[in-house]
Amino acid sequence: MTLDGLSEALKKSQLSFYFQPIIDVKNNSIKFFECLIRWTKPNGTILLPKDFLSKFIHLNARSMKEGTRIWRTVFDKSFKNINIDKRIKFSINFQMSHFANIGAGKLLMEEIEYIKTLIDNEIIIEITEAQNTRIDDKVANNEIQYAKNQGVSVALDDYGVKGSNLERLINTPWNIIKLDKQLIDNVVTNKRSRVAVEGIKTMATRLNNQIIAEGVETKEQLKYLKEIDIHLIQGFLFSKPMPGNQIEGYIKQFSAKYN
Image 1: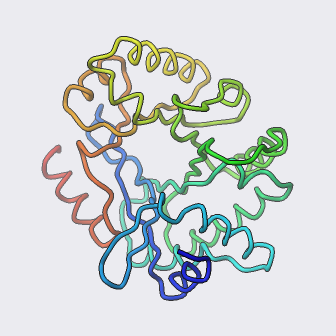
Image 2: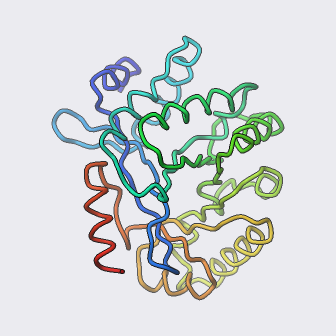
């Protein structure tokens, strides 16, 4: 897969978001939909981000230097005709490297303002630590703070495995911490996983961060998380990611089942 192929896919509106709900199990309500990018080929094959995201990021960086905004093609297709309760928020994924340059926060806010011309719901920024190059954390933190100063909430995505950085958890101005699926996978059977989850939860709570558990797939996992007062839940137990035209139907089904 080449950059030219990906660029052509964007022009043909083959890239769009799928949406996965985040549920508040304390009051049985849908709080967020995470926007997860997908590439739908003409033959109906759906490619996941691991198959093309690195090239998409490279293409996006090039387009920004040229003064174009390739994200907007994705926004236009994904948010078209979505009209849901304004209290439900949408979260969009970025990497720390997106904030590595001075002025990145301003550019990001321009994208969010564009999304607000399409939908009225609040937009949350999710930032993953995963990256292939070193960045200046001070610059990144300042740019994230710029976005926060404009009223945007910021989530640290996929925290708790691999290269998770405790200093970044403490010093970057997060609103939300999302516990990685790999931590959640073993909480029922592995004491060390439970200690890690409970330790991160304690730190995050004392830092006034909300906690979201990702990748929840079983009732046993959900039972444990509720016992330790983690009540924002994302995972296949409630729903796989869905295209935008299925959101309203899902909300109706969820309301009928839980309320």
